[in-house]
Image (cartoon, rainbow, N blue to C red; front, side, top):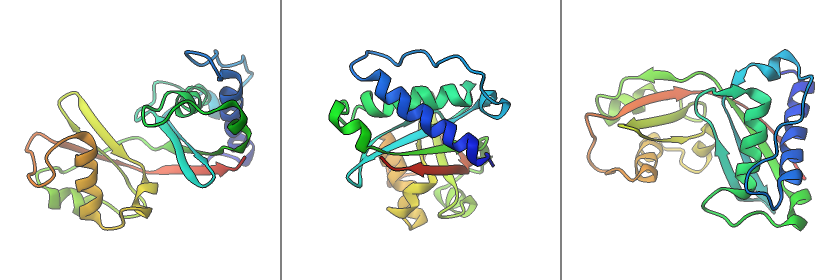
Length: 187
């Protein structure tokens, strides 16, 4: 668990990345620290943006590749300006954005011999899920359980999101679960 001060620092970094990155083709570099050790360690995060209570962008990393604060910095910018589902956030909307950050635990492989095996390994409302097949993969954060509370629907909609057949289970699917520490701030 992150300390309250670390959570605040990540939320401030996310908002600053969005404010400074408006109109840019990529995020500005993360300002030099010093950053606390907890924020400098590698971490995987998702940044979810809402505007007037509606999803406005969500981008993230499934596995740690860079320091936690840098991951938040990049994912916040990408959520605002590079989510293919939405146009870039307008400048006058930046201060009204709700920002939520999810810090992911390490991925834990789960049996994927069948849909029932994956469903049986999940704790609804708590686990996020990654399904992979070859080089393609898709994930649902634990927050998606709010829209898809039935485990079968959760797993099938994730397969649909990935563009894979929903009705037939593929023997080459791999599954991983993870948990998140999620904390919001509202604009």
